[in-house]
Length: 414
Ligand code: EPZ
Image (cartoon, rainbow, N blue to C red; front, top):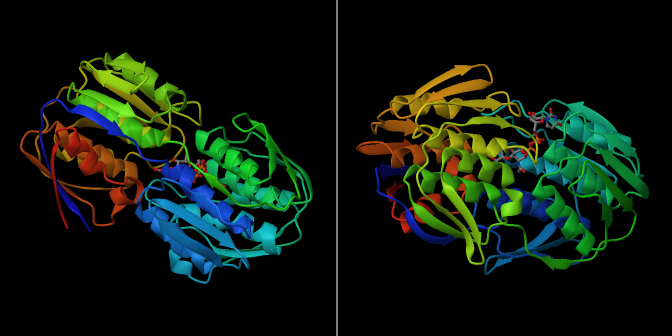
């Protein structure tokens, strides 16, 4: 896997377009299991996670074509996946559960591996399926669900993105009305509902805490363009802010990023929404307090990139990670660069303004790896970022290339 050599750079500047959102594209691909007609998803980013899910969906009986950045897929005879190792490689693979159960009355899926950032249980997914009439049987390393689904009422103890998406996917074909209370409000969930409605589903309340699905109608294909990636956009904004750069992001949806934009403005940078896109400029200097929350709160996926920016702020910034139990691993690697970060359980105190010196660091997870690439932009000398598990290319189509196009000095060594 790749190693990145990052050298301190001057101000990033220029214009760049963001890709379609990874966390929208993955559930949209799983919607292909619900129909025998072609679903075309446009502008799909070249990500390892997309390729892995494509393999899983083909294993589930999908016919899948990829051409000119679009993915077209459908399933004449969906079936449970055979390859256990594939499922454990990617959390989002759990989203084949709902569509398979709804289409065939049966689903057997490997339990998705936990990962570095937390145990990642799927109890809320399973409780949702039971509320729709499925019998659930847990076996070592996998779970089997069976039953003819019918509409039901679901309350989510936590507004889980994946559980909300899985239940929506299942409920579209379940006879009757399904109501999800305390549903996730993330834009990616709304994007899935918009696509499913374009396929003939009847879903109301997307983006609110209460989603109602009138199930039972057969779904047809459609051509759909996913929303832009708010986390990729936020990552690029943090990079620009760290270098006092002036960058225009094209194709972003600022309304999906209000918490991040507010926190960035608190550091002192200027953010302007223009007809051409979102422009960031000026110097980030003031420390911030960040509490990660479910949407519309500050996104947990932006915690690590924002911590990289905090290394450059004058004073102590405070981060409270309330969503995942182990999402500060990048802090240990940042400390190797000379960062002053103190972790107390789910709170990190970041002393900004220290001189950072390049050295060898290792990517700990997707967003942690990206934050270390950003930290290298502000470190003296060369930062060598090892990414043996390929975390960064799982979730960013070409982060080093995007940063290089804005003036960063990054070379990639396979
Ligand atoms: C999605 O993961 C995203 N992934 C994550 O992005 C993101 O961090 C997360 O939502 C929160 O916004 C995709 O969309 C593919 P959750 P998901 O279910 O669905 C607990 C990235 O970097 N929980 O909302 O797995 C769970 O342990 C990735 O792009 C249960 O307890 O997140 C966690 O503490 C990382 N039981 C919290 O809820 C369950 O059944 C949030 O998880 C499900 C979740």
